[in-house]
Amino acid sequence: MNAVELRDVSLTLGGRTILAGIGLDIAMGEFVGVLGPNGSGKTTLMRAILGLVPPSRGSIHVLGQPATRGNPAIGYMPQARHFASDLRLSGRDFVASVSNGHRLGLPVRGRIARAEMEQALRLVGAQELARRPLAELSGGERQRLLLAQALIGKPQLLLLDEPLISLDPHRQQEVVDLVKTLKADLGIAVLFSAHDVNSLLGAIDKVLYLGSGQAALGTIDEVITGPVLSRLYGSHIDVVRVGGRIFVMSGSCCAETEEHRHEPAPADRQPRHSGHA
Amino acid sequence: MLEMLQYDFMRNAFAAAAVVAIVAGTVGYFLVLRGQTFAGHALAHVGFTGATGAVLLGIAPIWGMVLATVAAGIGMGFMGERLAQRDVAIGLVLALALGLGLLFLHFFTAFATQATTLLFGNVLAVDMRTVWVLLALGSVSLATLAVISRPLLFASLHPELAEAKGVSLRLYSVLFLAIVALATAECAQIVGVLLVFALMVGPAAAAQRLTSAMAAGVLLSAVLALLEAWSGIALAYYTDWPSSFWITALSAAVYLIATLPRPMGRFASAAPR
Ligand SMILES: Nc1ncnc2c1ncn2[C@@H]1O[C@H](COP(=O)(O)OP(=O)(O)OP(=O)(O)O)[C@@H](O)[C@H]1O
Ligand SMILES: [Mg+2]
Image 1: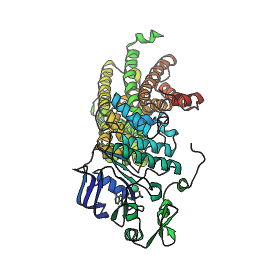
Image 2: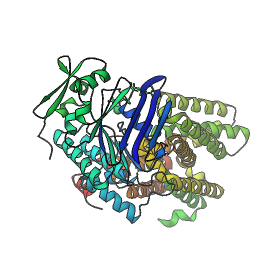
Image 3: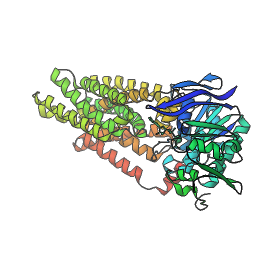
């Protein structure tokens, strides 16, 4: 049984075709990095797997079942994280509100739910953080709570939409390593979107590269190549490897790093060793 | 001290205030958490239109108020979060509601007293029957809130995720605003439509400042609302100033104290619970 199967899938939003005729299989236990420029459809693909965007053509299967909204086997960390930054609630209550959140009743948590929450907090190293109100946490600290939240409910498939945004390089590496460990320990499949393949080197099994409505799935060596990326970007792309790092160049500038300028805190991408424990 | 309890109107006032404060403190906590306090304020104004309309038709104002606020709450919920939080739209509805209410009162003879009572409340004029009505309405809103509280929290704190898990954001938005509407109509009986904020938002916002634990926060919010309402009535009895004035003053004072920087408080909120 595959974790995710797409057969000839087209996704359309507001009359615009985002992805056209995509077919791919993601096996259980695979850690897949989802890459592609801004607007290439990474978030849309995840929402389709969650059953929130019905395909305009083709079929999507998740763990052997047609994709439907409310699948409890999927853990999800959304990219749009719009909780009020002035929320005075503790991180623990914030994370706990996810367990059985769809069921009616009072939000009282049984021993099992509490143990599961503590386990999730421990996995991301946020047990201490979770005592403090969200309003007093840094963006990266909140990010870790969101990762914990995605682990609640024993998911078989994790969809993590840009979990590295606003983390310093050290924390980025920690999150990637953490997801790699989780994948190995729990045997789950992971889709992990990011903007820089280098942050995922050594951790991911495959890359899913999106661009121009198309997709390429394979190992890094198969996908991150000049010809494949040139097709996806629709322009000439060179791939240069220097000292174990991969640079995707369009003309003379770096195609991947160029996208980082769109992100809120480009400074976070620079090595920054002060101010973080 | 207990001498004031020998009067029927004082006993009714304390009973009514207790019911309303507990409902307002609890519902208000979720209102502040969801960042919809302005929507609550607007609902109170719509209640004014309903109440004056009811007066005009010869019905008890409280039923007109309940009907109008609940209808408006459900409408706002259906329009979706985006519209319900749009300041301009809400502000206009709010002004229109007050204007309409004024028009209705224009046709009514006992203009001034009626208007003042509706706008600023008069808890000392609450009769036993009203206390029972408040108790019934309050039980309905608290019971409904208890039933939906878990998915409501999920939808409030993790909207994208809740949507992905099959929780209808709109359904809970509608249900919650209907609960808020009921609570608002109740509050208006004590402090009037203009001052509903004092009981719904003041204690809840102060409680969220004082503790970051949710269960403790809800409880504290209800307790603060109760203390403010009761103290307000007692102070009104001794000073002969309006109770609504005292309740709003206490609400503002408590919020102010809660927001003062507390070197020890910060530490306490970080301590294990
Ligand atoms: N509701 C919508 N209606 C129409 N178009 C939409 C809608 N939502 C997104 N789009 C478009 O769909 C495309 C894919 O968006 P998506 O969010 O999936 O991109 P992404 O790869 O996640 O980008 P990013 O790296 O910026 O997160 C974008 O061009 C976007 O403008
Ligand atoms: Mg995205």
